[in-house]
Amino acid sequence: MMTRTLILALSLTVAGAPALAAEQPTAEVRIADLDLSTGRGQQRLETRVKSAARSLCNNGARGVAEMTRQSQCIADVLASAKPQADRAIARAEGGTQLALLMVRAAR
Image 1 (cartoon, rainbow, N blue to C red):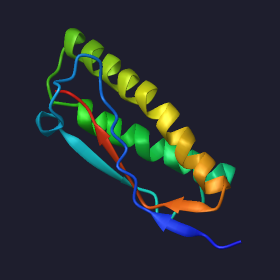
Image 2 (tube, one colour):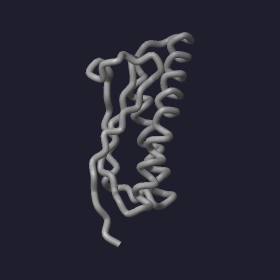
Image 3 (cartoon, rainbow, N blue to C red):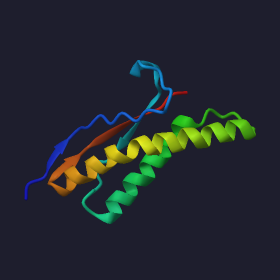
Protein backbone atom coordinates (compact mmCIF):
# COMPACT_ATOMS: atom_id res chain seq x y z
CA MET A 1 0.00 0.00 0.00
CA MET A 2 1.33 3.42 -0.95
CA THR A 3 1.36 6.07 1.76
CA ARG A 4 0.66 9.66 0.78
CA THR A 5 1.79 12.58 2.90
CA LEU A 6 -0.49 15.58 3.34
CA ILE A 7 -0.43 18.70 5.47
CA LEU A 8 -3.53 19.26 7.57
CA ALA A 9 -4.24 22.54 9.29
CA LEU A 10 -6.03 21.40 12.41
CA SER A 11 -7.72 24.29 14.11
CA LEU A 12 -8.38 23.64 17.77
CA THR A 13 -10.28 26.44 19.44
CA VAL A 14 -11.18 27.15 23.01
CA ALA A 15 -14.76 28.07 23.87
CA GLY A 16 -15.29 31.78 23.62
CA ALA A 17 -12.35 32.22 21.24
CA PRO A 18 -12.32 35.31 19.03
CA ALA A 19 -13.92 34.83 15.64
CA LEU A 20 -10.77 35.78 13.78
CA ALA A 21 -8.13 33.05 13.74
CA ALA A 22 -5.38 35.66 13.45
CA GLU A 23 -6.14 36.74 17.02
CA GLN A 24 -5.50 33.27 18.40
CA PRO A 25 -2.05 31.95 19.34
CA THR A 26 -1.12 28.80 17.45
CA ALA A 27 1.28 25.91 17.86
CA GLU A 28 2.43 23.42 15.25
CA VAL A 29 2.22 19.75 16.11
CA ARG A 30 4.50 17.90 13.70
CA ILE A 31 3.38 14.36 13.01
CA ALA A 32 5.14 13.44 9.77
CA ASP A 33 7.42 11.12 11.74
CA LEU A 34 4.53 9.31 13.45
CA ASP A 35 2.82 6.17 12.22
CA LEU A 36 -0.69 6.99 13.37
CA SER A 37 -1.92 3.55 12.36
CA THR A 38 -0.13 2.14 15.44
CA GLY A 39 -0.95 2.52 19.11
CA ARG A 40 2.50 3.94 19.80
CA GLY A 41 2.10 6.59 17.10
CA GLN A 42 -1.33 7.52 18.43
CA GLN A 43 0.05 7.82 21.95
CA ARG A 44 2.84 10.10 20.74
CA LEU A 45 0.26 12.26 18.91
CA GLU A 46 -1.72 12.58 22.14
CA THR A 47 1.43 13.55 24.05
CA ARG A 48 2.32 16.20 21.46
CA VAL A 49 -1.19 17.69 21.42
CA LYS A 50 -1.21 17.83 25.25
CA SER A 51 2.17 19.57 25.22
CA ALA A 52 0.95 22.10 22.65
CA ALA A 53 -2.22 22.72 24.70
CA ARG A 54 -0.19 23.34 27.87
CA SER A 55 2.07 25.72 25.97
CA LEU A 56 -0.84 27.66 24.47
CA CYS A 57 -2.73 27.94 27.76
CA ASN A 58 0.20 28.85 30.01
CA ASN A 59 0.72 32.59 30.38
CA GLY A 60 3.12 32.35 33.33
CA ALA A 61 0.69 33.77 35.89
CA ARG A 62 0.39 32.08 39.26
CA GLY A 63 -2.43 31.62 41.72
CA VAL A 64 -5.42 29.38 42.20
CA ALA A 65 -7.67 31.27 39.78
CA GLU A 66 -5.02 31.21 37.05
CA MET A 67 -4.33 27.50 37.56
CA THR A 68 -8.06 26.84 37.27
CA ARG A 69 -8.24 28.91 34.07
CA GLN A 70 -5.24 27.10 32.61
CA SER A 71 -6.68 23.69 33.47
CA GLN A 72 -9.98 24.60 31.80
CA CYS A 73 -8.18 26.01 28.76
CA ILE A 74 -6.16 22.79 28.37
CA ALA A 75 -9.30 20.67 28.78
CA ASP A 76 -11.09 22.75 26.13
CA VAL A 77 -8.20 22.49 23.66
CA LEU A 78 -7.95 18.72 24.17
CA ALA A 79 -11.71 18.28 23.81
CA SER A 80 -11.75 20.18 20.54
CA ALA A 81 -8.66 18.28 19.35
CA LYS A 82 -10.09 14.80 19.89
CA PRO A 83 -12.42 14.53 16.87
CA GLN A 84 -9.85 16.10 14.59
CA ALA A 85 -7.03 13.87 15.86
CA ASP A 86 -9.36 10.89 15.42
CA ARG A 87 -9.80 11.90 11.77
CA ALA A 88 -6.01 12.10 11.33
CA ILE A 89 -5.70 8.59 12.79
CA ALA A 90 -8.47 7.28 10.54
CA ARG A 91 -6.76 8.78 7.51
CA ALA A 92 -3.47 7.15 8.53
CA GLU A 93 -5.21 3.82 8.89
CA GLY A 94 -6.53 4.36 5.36
CA GLY A 95 -3.02 4.94 4.01
CA THR A 96 -2.70 8.74 4.17
CA GLN A 97 0.05 10.06 6.47
CA LEU A 98 -0.47 13.64 7.65
CA ALA A 99 2.52 15.88 8.28
CA LEU A 100 1.33 18.73 10.48
CA LEU A 101 -1.46 19.74 12.83
CA MET A 102 -2.05 23.38 13.82
CA VAL A 103 -3.31 23.90 17.37
CA ARG A 104 -5.13 27.16 18.20
CA ALA A 105 -6.39 28.53 21.49
CA ALA A 106 -7.65 31.83 22.80
CA ARG A 107 -5.58 33.69 25.38
